[in-house]
Image (cartoon, rainbow, N blue to C red):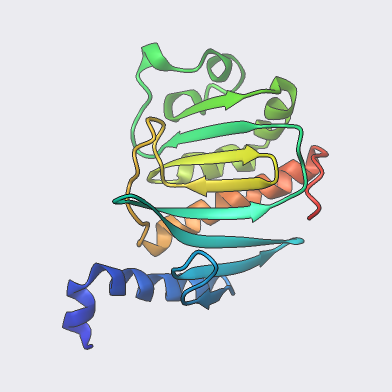
Length: 188
């Protein structure tokens, strides 16, 4: 299928961009992976970050995941991409502890000390603010995931832009490094 066919078929364009991204990050592109669709497997530290398309009903979104063994903490960080959180809805915790994040981020957490230690990383805050699209970074028992779901759970489609994939991967990598730094057991 020539250039015109690739341009007109959004799934072929996504696949082409995902292959490019996989090559740039030294990942392995897998057609019809465990999720049933295309996947990218990226080795990082002692983990494998998997990038895949998730489909629920008619909604599709991009999901990055890394498995771990920690079972005790849970949190969600909602990046608002280029949008701003309305002043009246800003998180009081972020307003007081991390005012640089408050205009473009919301959080849910069960352990304020661990979240504070995690967000004390200037690198992680920088990468969170650099993601140009809304996302949800979720740490739950056994899994760290980042997807392009908004705070209001709106799916934002599949990430096809290579730069946006890099931005999401930077957040995942930095979050894994920082979780290890603060002493969360991430062994698999």
